[in-house]
Length: 218
Image 1: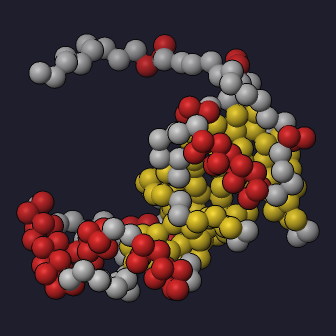
Image 2 (image 1 turned 180 degrees about the vertical axis):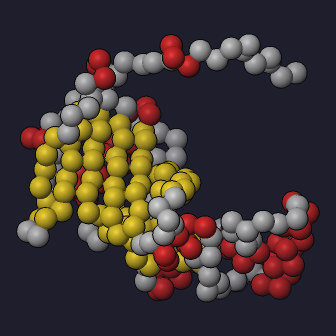
């Protein structure tokens, strides 16, 4: 039996004061990728659920934004990599407007990381290797699902999956419409919750000679 929902949602009174940690420009790495790796490792050590989950925001040529959760699959000095269907809504928007913003939110650590920059396709060899590492049924699903397109019903999707499974067997290759994107960072923001909403916000901005570190007002 499902519990009855509250008769009124008093959202204005929902609040939390943050007090786990602090963050200062003197505490962070000179390289935002290294700082990000440090925080990601701490999120994994703290067993935050889905520590690599990130909100990816894109926009079309008219400036209308959309966002969704994707999973980070690689981070290196060049940027942050995720994989998806190139023909999805995000793929179409990135083809038209190759810039995006990413947000990580590690609630248990009272932390966020924001990243903005240009997006490029990852190398085909890297996409092939990652695709081959995925579970078999996920690989088949990438062939079967026309991501972001309207379909008749669940039964249609399951028929397409069964047909793809019969056709592809146990070694499906990466389909040409599926691969990786790399966000090449132009700025990072590291956010640490603090008491009284006086949060710490350390920002990195890319310059011609490297990274400039500053602090933003909360």
